[in-house]
Length: 543
Image (cartoon, rainbow, N blue to C red; front, side, top):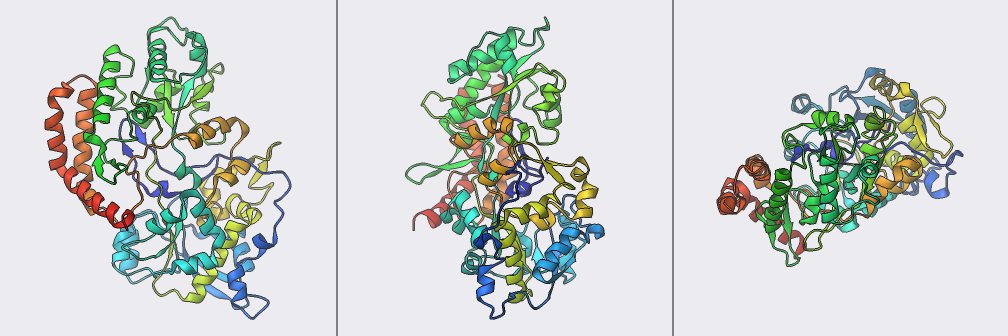
């Protein structure tokens, strides 16, 4: 198991047809070579920029006292965290770190903390930042300074989403208050896992590659007794028809607004592609191919049915399938049925030739960490030096994030990091000060592939990385915030979900009700959201 927090940690999961996840995200648990990573000249210099700015041979000659609000697995820092990890950082960078014992995931506690006039030097929260930003509680930081003092950190973020996207999306109301963050999991769409043993049982020799072949597979999974128990008790699939949506040109319907090649923004929910998708879902449900409870089941019910072999296709992030992820959805099946095997489909094309996978919001340089408004430049540079070194030096990062080798983790024969079971517990994470609290840093797929993804996990990741992406929100970068979405997002989601559910299960005539649905969607806030997105798109992309 590996514990990573990405932008997805901070996004609220939206249940469309099944939950579009995001919690404690998302990396497998795998490895590098057994030998420690050899430090290079560039990676061992704690901060070349800081060093060059100091006439002293020791850029950290002066001890600094730094207050620290970090992201913690339990939400609240633990006073037992005066650990070897913390001491390692303090000694290396000549700092004294004072941990703020604050539940950084509790909005009321966070708001009260700052309302009382308190602050911190390093700030990494798991609540909305906007109210705090609007109160002027964080210090504005020059992007040039970030790039000068944290070149490795910034390079990793840029490589994952592109420098232009980083520069646009790291801003809040045109200013920079955060060192931006993104992790590789936030760039990987979901995949569709399929019961390979069921394919064999129903006589399908190769994985479906077309919409027609996929439809045929669902029929056989429903009617040809794929589990060979002599009962009519299975369905083809459950929940989110990930690649089916992609085949009709989108990743989500509720709050997705896409710009076309001419830069015109329009809602997916009232598009012809969404209408055709609903007609397909209605037809498939009329055939009885999909679990009729799939639009109302929550994740626990869905996964219970998956583990019990009630359906044969499931969409989720590749991390959820990875053998090194705790409670992964592969072992969930094979533990109950050792003969079960999981294979992974590639996105198939729809009627217009379009295809893709969803499960992601458009990649943004998320709000990584900030600095208190009164934090001195000297302290900011020291914090940046710590984070730059953590990012540039694999060996140091692994020690801070996973603990000491042989104690917190071991490596298997292929170099895969394997956490000792004790170090997967919340109490031990707190006690040792490992994982996100001090180890928060952008993790690239290159690092994960070498260190965190076991050989058996690679097929799902490789399909994910090669799939065209259909985003759940927008398909374009923009700066700023869509205030109309914040105001009306819940309302339009309700309108779309109700129509989608009733349409998919044949409770209404899609053609007859379509125009009324479109009007209801636009009147509920869809028009205002679309117009605001158009302004944001134009301001950002038509300069």
